[in-house]
Structure formats: structure tokens, C-alpha cells
Image (cartoon, rainbow, N blue to C red; front, side, top):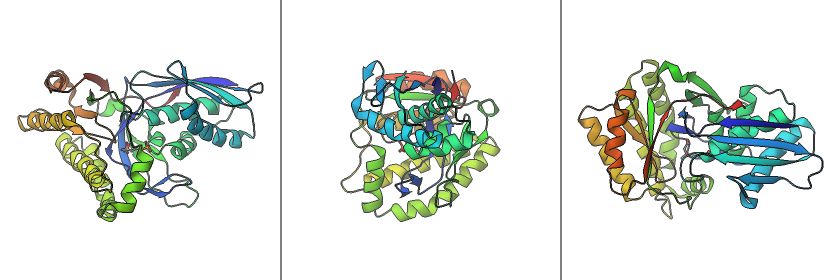
Amino acid sequence: MQATAQAQPNIALIKYWGKRQTKLNLPAVGSLSITLDSLWTRTYVRFDSGLEKDEFHLNGQLDTIRCRRVSQCLDLMRRRANISYCAAVVSENNFPTEAGLASSASGFAALVLASSKALGLDLTDEELSEIARQSSGSAARSIFGGFVEMELGHCKDGSDAIAHPLIGPEEWPLHVVVVITSDRTKIIGSTEGMQRTSLSSPYYQAWIQNHVSDIEAAKHAIASRDFYALADISEHNCLKMHGLALSTRPALIYWNGATVECMNCVRDLRASGTAAFFTIDAGPQVKVVCAPSETQKVMDALRNVPGVLCVLNSCIGQGARLL
Ligand code: PMV
């Protein structure tokens, strides 16, 4: 009753921000992402009748705080398998946790896959995606590789609020430069941030109303491999999400000074003909999507921005898999 799985974080180009229902964690908007390759979470799960409670180790340390969310996710799996055993979960991230690098996406995608295998459940990717969504909306997308769309869904039970792949990583092999501007864990998590936004941002309804056209524009750009159209809609959607966050009371300011300087650097690069655009999630890190031939130039430029701590490079990767 044990298994190990790996999943990678994904970076949303069209963002998920807002929930229409909290119990099943149903999104208020659809979203679209790319799954990364070189950042990963590896998770080992063992269900054991001898254990009295779930145990969670992250990066070699017992983590009783995060264990609560891990247990909630395991409960969903135990219910499906009709098994009550507790589990030992050992997880490792090769990148900073809860720092706006989507560690919850890779973390829960790996956990759902490893625990389903350990329990002998034979689930489809769609079922894995649905279960992962209940723990973290973005985790539903990390089940798949390449360019991935997360459906808003319409069913009350959430069965159609799942992700599906659009094109594989090899079909448009862009690169992602991940720029770390802070190694502190974030102060306001996405769930609380989304709730505050829906309650207090005057722009929230407009955000909900506009998301379909943003998704359509991004899908069209992907289908025609139009880099500059994808750049345009992705930066617009990212800044719109941060506009929501900034207009929330109290305001959610996820950026630091270096974040803003990186955005300017990327816009300058693009203005001078370099195929690169940025996106930023609920944290200060900047992800720069670029043509593979421009990666070195983009990395060199961003490394020189004051306040940048380090710069990583990733291809677009595969979905979650068993190890
Ligand atoms: O999946 P969560 O609850 O961690 O929320 C993710 C929110 C963003 O990363 C900001 C956007 C997204 O679509 O990934």
C-alpha cells in the first residue's frame, strides 16, 4: 500500500482567482496554464494499519501544520477506497515552498496520484484532476502536461470542474525563466486572498464577466502558435488579477520592488524584439515565458535586475506520473 509520484508546478497564463463554492473548491473562472519541467515535487505515500494518525514530512522535516491539508486530501482518497488506514507521507520540493511558485499545485497533484496508486484505485486523469482540485484549484491542472485548460464546470457536484490538456509540451516547446525575488513564504495564501477579493474588490464582477474572452483569446493564440498574441493576453490577464488584488481591502500587494523592475525589464526586452512575456502569481516571483532561442538573453538580463536572488530555467513539462 505504498507508491511514489512526481508532479511539476504549473504557471497560469489565464489566472484562476475566485471561488464560486468553497466546500468543493469550485472556481469562479476557468484558467489556462503551462506545466513546468525542471521544478518538481516528489511524494511517497504509505498507508499503514499501525499508524494512529497521518504523518507528513516535507523536505526532511516533520510538518504538523501542513499535515492538516494533507490529511483532508487523504480523506477524499480513503473515502473512495473505503479504507480508514492512516498514512505516512514524505514529500520533497526542489524549489521554495509557498513562495508563489505553485508548490501546492505540484504538491497535491503528486499526493493524489501517489495515494490513489497506494490504495489500488484505478482512477482516470480526469478523476485525479477533480480530486486534486478539491485540495488546490491549480493542482487540477498539474495532473496534465503541456498547455492545460481548467474548465469552470457547471455541475453542482463539481464533476466537470476539471482540467484537460490542449497541446503537449513538444508541440510548442517554449521556455520559462523563473525569477526568484524573495525566498520568504507568502503571508496571505491564495484561498484567503480570493475570499477577501470577492468580498471587497469593486472590480470582482468585471473580472468574472471577462474571463471567457481571455481564455478564448489565449486558446486562439496557442492554436495558431502566435507568441505575441499569447504575450498580450497573458500579461493583460496577469495584471488584471493583480489589479483585483490591489483593489481588495485590505490591499493584497504580492509584489516587491524587484518584481516591478523585472516586469519593466521584460517589457523592454519585448519592445526591442525579444520574444518574452511575464506572468506573476500570488507572490513576488516573476515567470518569464520566452522562445528557446532567447532564453540565455532573458536570463542574463533578469539576473542583472537589482534585488533578483536567482534565475532558473525550465522547459514545458509532462503531467504527474508514478515513479
Ligand atoms: O490553487 P491555489 O488555491 O493555490 O490558487 C492559485 C492562484 C494563482 O496561482 C494566483 C493563479 C493560478 O491560476 O494558478
